[in-house]
Image (cartoon, rainbow, N blue to C red):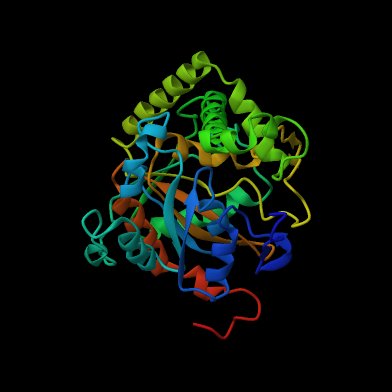
Length: 348
């Protein structure tokens, strides 16, 4: 999809996309070019490719990494909306790379307990957020099948049928903050000095139309809009905290559709629902990103030979909870080794 380097193809079907933006990292791990890889996640950039490549990923609690602490002056929220995390074929590998990324003083990977008992944990299944998130046929059923595996681990799963928060408000808050952050990053003092602000608004800038759309949108964001967006994000964070008083973790699909054609820039519709922006089809990742929550992605199986995953997210600072649930799931059904990409079936 990157015009400079070409499209990254899905190892389970090379006519389909690998997801992104850490699609290259995911494909390298899935195809056994690498044991582990790291990537960044603002709007599902670890979670989406992990789910579409039959892998595990971890989006750590925002502000977990030391570098993120140093860059807080650039943030709109009390934490960054993008964070670095690991992607791997096992949850224990996630834990080891996480320790490397954040440092042993912040996370001791040797303390990761692969045998942690999760019996009695409670999970809230949010499905399609009471119909707010369009889902391609088969996605929810495949995720429900994965939830049955979690039940066999002794975990209680409850379907949260009513949306806990307005999806439309989450969208407004997220897209406002995201556009503003991207705009501020792209139009830095250094870049303005070198190229001039008109470079981004006129002519033919050397980046994709979607980036230009974000920059122009961010330029137009007012202080009042930012204030409203932050207020919504704060309200959602409080709502999520109250949910974690009842549940150890919440669960959503890792994407709203199966891997789509690699020839598409982005899907124009999911079923009968048209997508009004280039990233609307990834709306289900916003609840995690907007609140800066830790989230483990686990592979949930296949539909017509294409993989999908689950987002398992817990309260801020409770990364070990999400990892432990992922590990318990992994011991029950090891999808990366049970169904590797075509041509790798002899590898273990």
